[in-house]
Amino acid sequence: MTEDSIKGHCPECGPDRFADIVGHHKERLDDDEIGIWSVTDHRILRCRGCMTAYFQRDSVFSEDIDYKETATGEWQPYLPHKINYYPSPVKRAMPEWSMGLNILDDALGDLFTDVYGALNADLRVPAAVAIRTVFDRASEILGVDPAVTFAEKLQALADQGKIGADEKSSLDVLADAGGAAAHRGWKPKPRELDTLVLLIEAFLHRTFILGDAAKELKARLPPKPKRQPKPAAGPVLNRPNLPPNTESVGLQKI
Image (tube, rainbow, N blue to C red; front, side, top):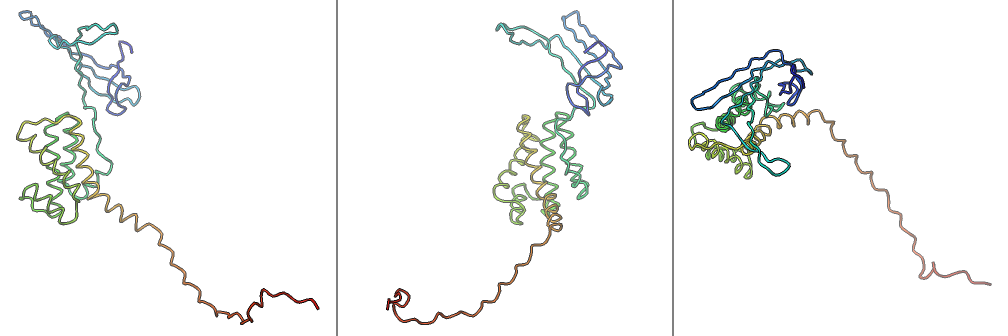
């Protein structure tokens, strides 16, 4: 890394990629009365791999002091850098099959896209609420009354055979999580949010994507060979009746 280059998070190539600094502005703010300060570097970067241009904001604030342990076991103070990028790095990419949701229903596809927009912006509360909303729209497409409660929606899907008992219990978590995020001030941790995303992805993929894909695959499979008829049984040859002990008696010498 030189004065004209730096490592950044390229929106195409990913993190820790060398980039050329093609634009730079440093901003410093000082408050002499209370003795605090901040320094912010605004950089326009161009990835050396794919040549994509993006923006980096690197800031340090005097009151954000933290401590880290050195190799000798001592605690050393340091000022962490807060780095933001535009476009924001993708934390979780949409699955390839998600385009099928847009074809099925525009509203469902847009809501599903909003989930990943919130995830990549680290908006965990809106992401949890959006996941719950995606399920509401999906159940409506499946013919469930949108005015009923979440528990009633799950029961209706179970009665239709769309979900089993285990999946019903798992999807019930979406209602509790969405309600807790919207009304009880709950902010899910990243791992908890990952669980919610996996639940809604699995439900949508199995319900709207995998079933049609299985039908298409079955139509392309060669037919099973027909079983050949068994040959007719031939006449049973009766063995001639022999006198007792005939087989075991040898010829007598004359």
